[in-house]
Image 1: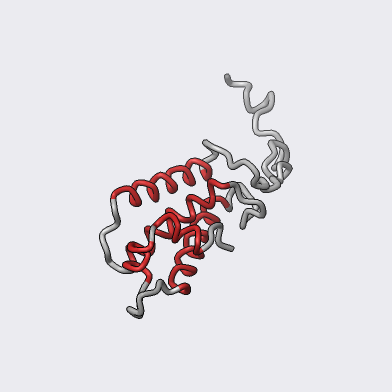
Image 2 (image 1 turned 90 degrees about the vertical axis):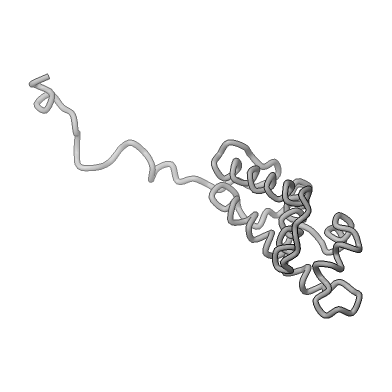
Length: 141
């Protein structure tokens, strides 16, 4: 599930740049499958970053995910076409990745996303093969 639409990406990129990176057949129109593939790939990257902490795909994504999806998809369109990525778009894609890494590392959260349930019993402090420290093992200390 892409977090942004073709029209949203087209609005952000503008018609001239969109044709530059998405008109593979040279007919003067951006190729929808090319754009949809970039959006799907970008959404996959977002989902992989969030999957350790949140249920993905995010059912009710915040606007932030839409913007990040567009930023990452634009980068993909330029890279696949081997055109130089404009500095502003490179910076936005890098910012999206830093933010996603912060969320993945637990340094930030994502409003509206459903956190994964944690099995706290499996990670508890009880269990194992008896006591490690007892009166006999500590007698010499």
